[in-house]
Every structure is written in structure tokens, then in C-alpha cells.
Length: 88
Image 1 (cartoon, rainbow, N blue to C red):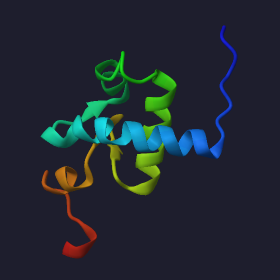
Image 2 (cartoon, rainbow, N blue to C red; image 1 turned 135 degrees about the vertical axis):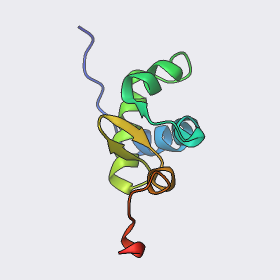
Image 3 (cartoon, rainbow, N blue to C red; image 1 turned 120 degrees about the vertical axis):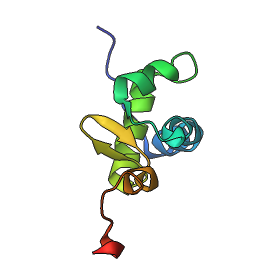
């Protein structure tokens, strides 16, 4: 088993800046995607660890929403009939 990579803040910030546009482009078509599907789609361009870290970061920041094990953009989720806080 390969050793666990320890990320510095600079490494993490650089990975997020580099990978975020690719990750956000996938669910932009309005189709929720599982983490495994996102990792597979970006295989060859980014490592699984990098994509997983970026997905977690985007979920925490609210730039992606995980629903039922799938990731979707918040605007796309609101467009699927779920009430947003501004509608309540």
C-alpha cells in the first residue's frame, strides 16, 4: 500500500485551484453524478485523492451539494423542485 500523502496548505490550495474547474464542469449539465463517476471522468488528468479532496471542499463551501450519494450544482438542485431558503 502506498504511503499516505500529507498535504501542505499550499499544495491543497494549488490542487483546488487546478482541479475545481474540471470538477464543476461535470455536473454543470444538470445531471447528478456519483463521486466514483466524477473520479473516473477525471482519471488521467487528476488523481483520485485530489478529486476526492476537491469534492469535499466544494461540498463544505456549498459549491456542490451531495444528495443521495450524488453531487450536483446548488442551482441545478433548486431547479429540480426543491424549495430554496429565499422561497420559504
